[in-house]
Length: 498
Length: 79
Image 1: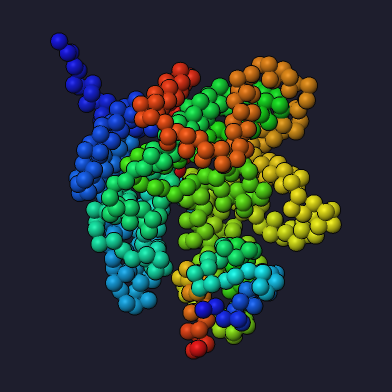
Image 2: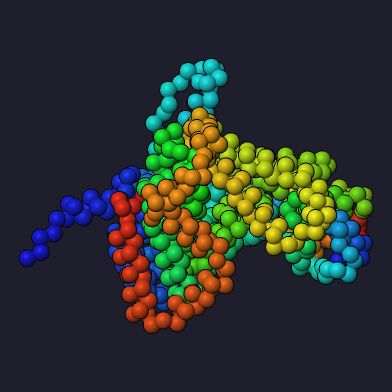
């Protein structure tokens, strides 16, 4: 009666480098439904619940990166061991040596998979030798889980936490599937204690989770994928074929796309974690509302920026503190160059990071004169100044996103040239007419971004009070809507490549 | 407890009027107006200069709150 093709099911469930378990995919929804079901059945048995999550997480990673799930186990094992050794060692010197070995091991692995070919390219470019690029598979999310695991050892070294005695708990921290491929880069000191708590998912948690999952799907599928496929990619793939107006709107569109793509993923990750009883770190806080680049980094990819602040910026700043303000500048430049490289092994990412470092260094020098000027003009702390700062910051960011998006400086130069050389205001109405859905989406996307946070909290509160049946109907409607709007296959999340 | 001397150094470095802000042992740097990640270096070097002490970087990095910083100063000045 039922003609089931088991081979097809097996193929569907097997590792496929081009088909990881994307949060919005039907396969993920089905598997996650069963996971939640069994998770609730095992609610009273902590051990069974954690083991279920551990195996599901390993499978989730296997589906994305195949045999490299062993790398996860290796990472968990060495970092658990080093955490224990550093804590138990009395000598500060030995602690430091152990930390250095640990950092070299973690970054060595990350470096091998992610940066080998970049180094080969540099060696070839500098004519120091001639090597062919090596075919190395990049295990998905390696930058995220390497930093996540390293944070545990670093915090033990800084005496900010004590190691966990449970390898099982630490493994769950490292493997936890919602944040393994693209963050948030959670902190062991906040995540591990939650494992030992009894499962408690409140009505408020469910309301918040639903809102996050729905907003994540809308951000990713309705805004980011639509903008990318129907407009941004077309313009940026051949900017010279488009006018300055289209290039400028593509730039605004890309700013929205990358935010919706990445924060959409984080929203879903935080949402599904809430349904499993785990509270992850906040990763975004309306970043384009920032009044300065420094403010932007307090709102964008917070789990990475705070990681870099604590474990890279602060140590460098303290090391060079006798140089006063220059200690800040050295620390800013080093941190942001490495932040750029963290995103990808290329000169463009390095330059993107350097540009952010440059922005912030310049603003450090301008801090006092700006304050004096604003006071003289009587606009210090005024609403007008805030709006002005938001607009300037947004455009500085938009410029930096060009380098994040393109592959070469020549492409970036083409975009700038089109915007400055072929910009005609009279084309704007034609643009709106020709790209109406895109234009509406960009406007609506940014308007939503600037809505107050209280509105979001209120919506979550209302959702939490709705009957579970209706909650399911609303969620199903959003998934259906996303499926209707989805113009092609679900696009991979931009941040997966990092 | 935070000493009067350290309280004054912090206020002076951050341009705060004494009494304008309350600083307790458990106060975090980012809870004090103006004590952001960039100004942190000025606060630390001002404390070092005033007390004529030298911290190791790791000692400062281990401080979780102002109370820890006070303890660090006390340990260096043998109070």
